[in-house]
Image 1 (cartoon, rainbow, N blue to C red):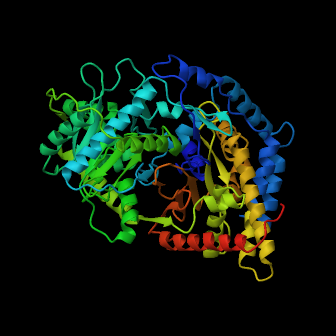
Image 2 (cartoon, one colour):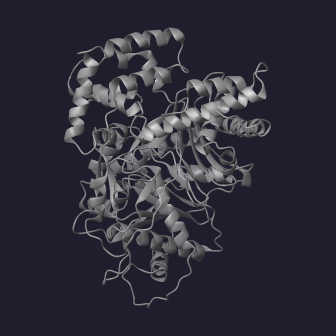
Image 3 (spheres, rainbow, N blue to C red):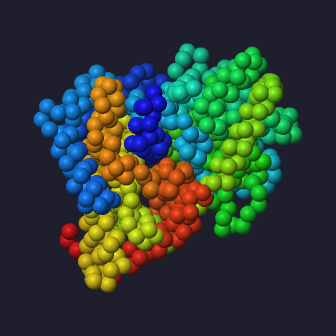
Length: 639
């Protein structure tokens, strides 16, 4: 196991966001019928194609091409020799490829189980910052506590409305380029939870059994409550009823709990697994933990954040969504293993943090879009006020050993919180409408701006990860769009060169955008290189053959060290997703392109002297503006 983890770490696999959202927005189609359609989901899933195993030679050729802009000529020559050796007829590459093809015939998806284990469940760093993304929603204007609780009640009602579509299998099927997408991730995000294990975690999903979850968990002042959200006749509670129940919770948890049990979920996974086993020895604790794990989702009623100036407010909220601000603030008001945690603070800041293993960003954002729209609806019915039972407070018996575990987790978390630098930038000068008007993909345009910003800061290109959705295939997760290309390097090198005319620069920009577009299309059709190379490597481990030289090569380590880990997560709501970097000297950059502006969240680690989120934001803004000026000052060429 250790060998496997080491090998995967070298491959960059363990960086959990070898990462995970979709490359393009999805058009939603309305369902054709309402009410329960038994087996509709299964029929839809079975009609989807299986993920292909790309041809070996194709992947190796494209791998060498991807290395060109990021390694020296000498290193490239060495890797070319290794590739030639690897794919000799009858050689190790061919054997591993055949093994993958056999696996593809026997399984629903040759990659999905491997990916879940290697990218998430065997990854041992804390889920906080290193794996779980956050989403910053538009600030709410609460006049008082009642405003906060009423909004929370309406939000819960929106979640239950979405859950009804999942339960009835009437969720609209999403399409990309006219092709239906796998909807499986939607069925994994409610009533599910990650469970820590000594070497590998697991996921439990209570949405599937006969006895479905009827409650959510509400956390206030570090205290957990089980709130039943359905009436005895099976109908969901209304906003009015939920508001009354939330008021009861608030009024019985006015004092902050001295022992924030939720802090334990922020720790290193091995430490948390030990503490978890220790915690569950007590019957009361076990019942309380199970209630959290089985709940539909968690709603965190947060205390206000420390006051900050308007210009850094959004960045502070992003940090709150990712980690809660540390042990003195709201980090104890979480159970980070829970798949979905909705956060509503007294000061109107709100959003969500989600445990990444069950799902990528787009299904989460589609759920959020639905809920945000739902909160704006007028309340049509006043519900009959029959008295409801008191929500159940979840009790914990804190032994001296558990207290020590909590203290250690607090210290480790606070170090993490201090180390994370997050900058949210709303780029107001233009949105996706501008690149579209130039017949350039907005995603390609933004990715090239990131390449230009990085090149201007550091004087060289780096391995760049952008997630591409594989949901055209059954149980598809993601592959990597490698945004750094031979064409992108030529463009960024030309941009500040006095030897090139503006027309030449603009042509290079358009060629680079076209190359990005082609790589994206290739990736979403299952023909990118990263997951195939990973599959070959894991096949070698499974076959117990010695690790091929190709994967021990310096160039492979460079290719898997993603200094830029990026993701486009488009939403209708004016929000932005955020996540931590995947390498110590890198950036995590997520963006949501709206028509007239673009929301960016940029993260870096303070412990790295070479990275700075605010500086990256500055260079990115300049790159976007310079690229617009360039295109506007040159006629469109017929590339």
